[in-house]
Length: 121
Image (tube, rainbow, N blue to C red; front, side, top):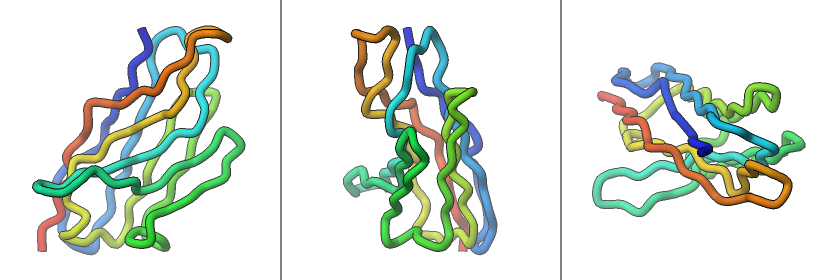
């Protein structure tokens, strides 16, 4: 069974940095686009950034210039470098892939369990 497992969340002061990691575990044939979402208390889950298998990236306007998404296809992993953090970045961050394939014919969307990021002012 394929799982996405996040790590790297925590508590940081405003202006600080954190690096989130997400690794896909299990028998993996291929992984499509991977992304990071976040959900703050009382708010809907929102897309933060995503990266295609070929390395093309897209960011929410609120994080452009501060966050950087990257991936290591050999490790089936995606990363989110978060700099110049603001209190409004506080949320649970979720890793996602819209297409995780265990075989050439068995593909599905997958979410990680989430990791808490708290930015104090």
